[in-house]
Amino acid sequence: MKILKKLIILYIENDTVMLDKYSPLLESNCDTLYIARSGEEAYRIYKEVKPHIVIMDLYVSKIDGITFAKKIRETDNKTALIALSRYAGRELLLEIVNLNFSSYLVKPVDETELLNALHKVSQKINKEKITYLSGNCSWNHNSKTLFYKDEPILLTKREQKLFQLLVEKNGIPCSDDEIFFYVWEDDFDKNVTNSSIRTLIKNLRKKIPVGLIENVYGVGYKINS
Image 1 (cartoon, rainbow, N blue to C red):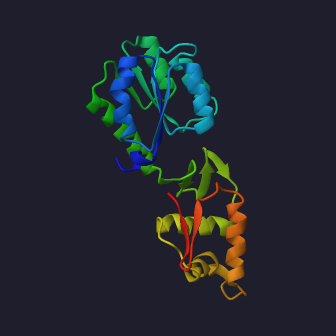
Image 2 (cartoon, one colour):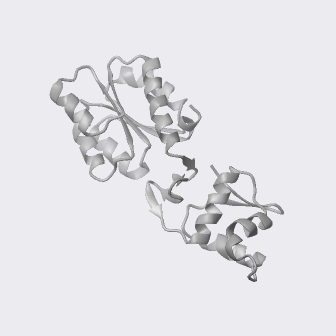
Image 3 (cartoon, rainbow, N blue to C red):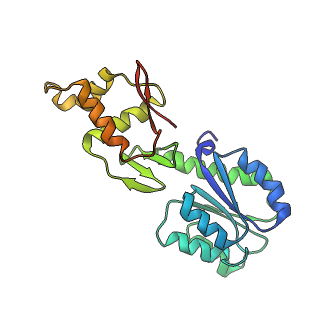
């Protein structure tokens, strides 16, 4: 469940008893938990924080769960959806399948069953080789793409290689020499100086949240995850 500890969860529920029961469990197993008591409130939170997982009661007020899921799926096929409901007829189950929900759980949900559903989602995310970082950022190792709130950030070739190196070091500071050899390996014979690294870091920092790349005095640079 290590990957789950780095994920943001949005929990939509208007039953106070259920909220009191499951909120502590969810909060202790993720990075940040957001709670909404209506579909309208949930959609506002979703647009603001772009959670990795949405757990929703399908019968919340103002905007029901299916309508909410359809609004998400108009532009987003990545966010994992977990449905909660006391009853689901054939038509509703077809909607759940068509909207690519990760799980459908019948209320009242057993805590172990809920954790198993979250574990399944986290395994899927882990297979996609995504590293979640601070500041609502993530790095896709397959496409070598940096995302902020699920929106890609356009990086130059050298910025991309530098970011990949920092992510692979996983919080261990990279020295100037390491950066030289990794980022400029294709034309290292050129006149590359410490100033080249400073300029590369400066330009990269303009595109990413403040504090994502940290300067470790006398050692080098590291990524904050």
